Length: 297
Length: 139
Image (cartoon, rainbow over all chains, first blue to last red; front, side, top):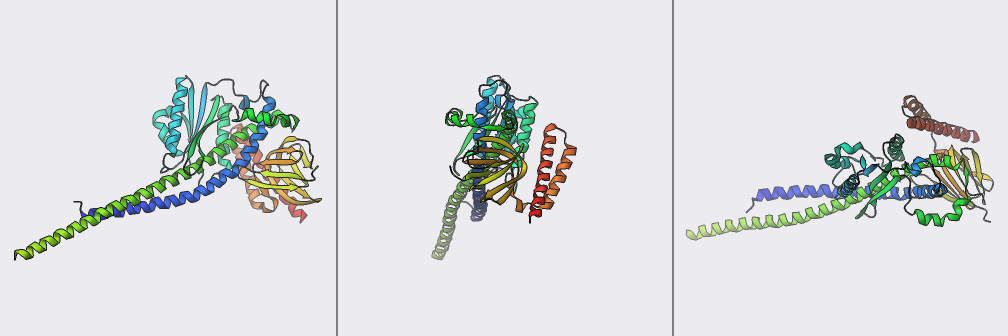
């Protein structure tokens, strides 16, 4: 029979845990709403950017010697994988699923004989990947999205870094790995290629805008616009990924904390039941002692 | 043909403005472009400056943008700007501080990218200041 005092302590400690998890849940819910709004309002920009870029890229499609950001270096020996994770834990499978996918990709590419470089955005990613791929991690960027939320400037800082590395010839292909926000319950691990530029719906879209794109005038020259637009697109893509990732993080944390709160509640119920039972048992046995003592007289 | 253009101003953070206007003047890198309904399809780069929205022959709104891209079709004008602020909301001292910070960054810049960023930032801050000067003069 567990000690009554121990049980009492245990119940108190679980109760305070529940308080913490439910507070975290509420904070995450509030942050989630903001992050979700940010992600959705940013979508307008990246979608339009994509349209413009696609109509531009279309005119370069068949040509040799376009800008390298668009056409690539012509090789795919060295891959740069940008992994977006959170800085903080306690958000369920959020970081785990990203890291698992990253591991899988790295192993796959390595088995094909390619070189892989990792750029980690968020502390958890570099912490989890460090043990296995210490040598492959080029850099970790920590502390994105503080109190004010994620700014576009932070995204351009990352994209400038990537552009610099690309121009220095440190990699041929760059792709990003992040959690795409679906709902508070589900995040989809998404892998999308940034360099060379490809578009998911490339074929369909070209057919749609086929007659439009031919009619555009460009000022200045197409190639000049493209040279400015491509690095910018990189920034926008990264910004979008950061926003999606932060919305997913808060969603995942909210769900995880909701579960934790519920589990703590169940545990408290169970413990209270045991506590009451043992209290009752103690009383009963005391009574029996008194009665049998009285009878013996 | 319709007598209005659908003007959309989008920044990475949000959709700043979406409305039908009779004319909009966009500061492009090779000179200002006035977009009226039925404009030739065009894609161009935008320099830091002020976008004027005209309605019934008068400037109804002025918005400061810090560069970006514009896509024009006969009935639509989409402006992708990195930053967009109403001219009335610009602050003299903030712009001044930005200019100084950018000048310092240019001095310290080591790589080409940093240098280009700092130069772009200086241009933005200068355009901001001149936009405010113009709006002060108009009042």
